[in-house]
Length: 125
Length: 125
DNA sequence: GTACGACTTAAACCTTGGTTTAAGTCAACA
DNA sequence: TGTTGACTTAAACCAAGGTTTAAGTCGTAC
Image (tube, rainbow over all chains, first blue to last red):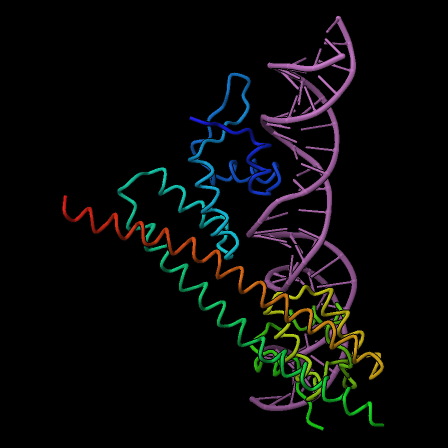
């Protein structure tokens, strides 16, 4: 199987190496192997996990919760229902969060319009 | 003019008093008056500012940038163009951020579907 | 054989956005 | 008059999510 160094993985996902180490230490990135010299070996499996970590992180799932998810991944197939449940709840949260942002954005857009009106009016003074 | 205590303002906006004090100290909440005893008096003006602060904060504008906005508010009408410009840029940022979250959400939804398939398959074993 | 670049670690450090604490002031009510 | 309750302050504290530092180990290219 193809393995990648931490530097390669970091470059591929555009994540600092220090962050990858931090994630591994936090338990977000299980199954990382090592070569004889103790260097991390990232396989396709890690890259796939990194993919899902990225999705979760960028939709604001806290690291502790991602760790819970990964603990379930490590535990095996018996936890698929739990994982599914977590992802479904997270999906709801993300949709709610987006809806909320859109709501607050309306307030900002009103302010924008008022300023634009004010500026158009100002040109006639 | 009607004035509100910090406790009333906090209750109306569901923001801790400590946070209102923190915002004022940071410069996010200008023009707060005081009574003879040194207690804060929040007028309609503050409530309106709190409204916009809430919109900006909940769309992830950093506090430093909100402070810049408020500094311009304090400076007066000569800064309306700057404020408008900031809000327009912020609006773009928020829309981008929402689009990005929706993109990452897709990855999560794929994972959800795979788990659901796996569970449905499992029932037939 | 040595210097370089990529890696390793633990621990210290950093920023953001608040929250908590401790000590004090004041108004109003019993 | 004294004791609540709502307020005040500065300063300490906190959690999350990393980043930086310092010291060390390799493999390889010169």
